[in-house]
Image 1 (cartoon, rainbow, N blue to C red):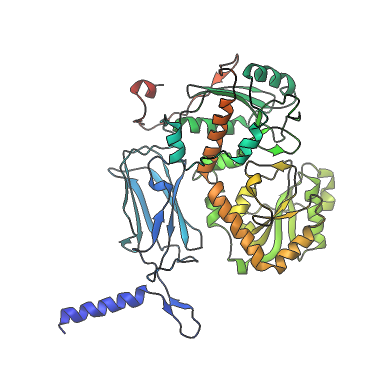
Image 2 (spheres, rainbow, N blue to C red):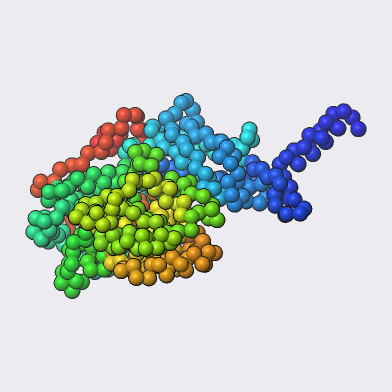
Amino acid sequence: MSRISRTFVVTLLCCVLACCAVKDVVTGYDRERVVCPLKSRVWGPGLEANFNVPARFFFIQAVDFENNSFTYSPGPNAFQVSVRPTSGRGRVWTQVLDRNDGSFIVRFRLYESYPGMRIEVKSGDRHVQGSPFLISDPVYDEKCYCPEQIQSQWQADMRCRSEMHPQIEEDLSIFPAIDLDRLATETVNRFARHHSLCHYSIINNRIYRKTHGEHVGFKMFSDAFLLSMARKVQLPDVEFFINLGDWPLEKRGADHSPLPILSWCGSDESRDIVLPTYDITESTLETLGRVTLDMLSVQANTGPKWVNKTNKAFWRGRDSRRERLNLVKLSREQPELIDAALTNFFFFRNEEAEYGPKVKHISFFDFFKYKFQINIDGTVAAYRLPYLLSGDSTVLKHDSVFYEHFYKQLEPWVHYIPFKKDLSDLVDKIKWAQTHDEEAKTIAQNAQQFAREHLMSNNIFCYYFQLLQEYAKRQTGPPVVREGMELVEQPQDGTPCQCSRLSPAHEEL
């Protein structure tokens, strides 16, 4: 055998031994296992130009040389990712999130628009299968005004569901016709004195509004989201009121001419039309921005492996409901089952001596050091539930009259463990979870999968759009700019934004 051929064979054998999983003949466990670049998979909507959310994302699945997918992390340096324009330098913030189950989320945020993008995913110095990924169409940043004119095309690009969302269908079922003149007059007369509202008209993709009430600061969330949507898709002409407070407003029954008020939260005792909460709305807009907790970041911060989590139920929060104080009391009676404490006193300050002292805030990500998470109502529904579902712990959910836009898609004992409003069965439910470890783990995994499929940023945009679209179909007259309304201006984009979808006249608006 020649020196060259001998060297080649030795090199090949070394590569095979280094790259393949080697089984220990005694234990059966992998002794060595590495990522195979050519067999690892990359997929997801962030690889396409027209999937336009504030922080775009795609996924990587680590696969070994025997074509087995990793079910645990192959290490934080298993993959290297580069996202940049196809030509020139770019302003792109990229982050690789290890989900610790063999998969990774790559998310990136553009601060300029580009005619094309090049995305490279490597393991070591080798490209994974399909890399580099080239996007040859224009890619627009979050501040670029470039709405897709064909609404069905935008919905397809954003992976929106084709059927009507069940909550939207239920909410609008009692409003077959919406008289906008009556809405404009009666809503102000009935609710403006004691509540805070924002009256919107969207006409020709421009957003006008007038606020009513004293505490209207939360209009910042609805303003920002509607403006973001208008930059991405041509919105229907529509006129509506958003309730800026926590509590749903419309108590009239379906047979007593209720008003169609949009609210962050619904209840069994009201007829409000439910929007995604201001909390998940903000985290959707500010992913890789000013927030640290969002539906992507929580997936990479789910604490230790299930077997290593503390076998207790955990809760932290403020004193916004009597049941929360009762939970703290229960925790003191059952410390082997529950770790619960209050971080702030406001509603029950006169009882701080009994239920305090208050404890320091801890990172939300540290919640997942515990196997079980208690989700208990605050002033209304506890808006942390989407993030709890995304983690790797089993959620115990308070029986409640309040709900968010996705609650009706959840199933008890599939996505969460229910407990009674008065907490009377909570101890028994926690004991059940502790003694049924595999079942509890499966519930946690089901919840995590639900969040990944239904609560991502594109799902939030799709929900808003479908709601406005279906609402608009029920209007009996054209929306108008009412007296006192002001134009909500689009933010100024400091970089050039050449939108190929609009004529020059439109771009100057």
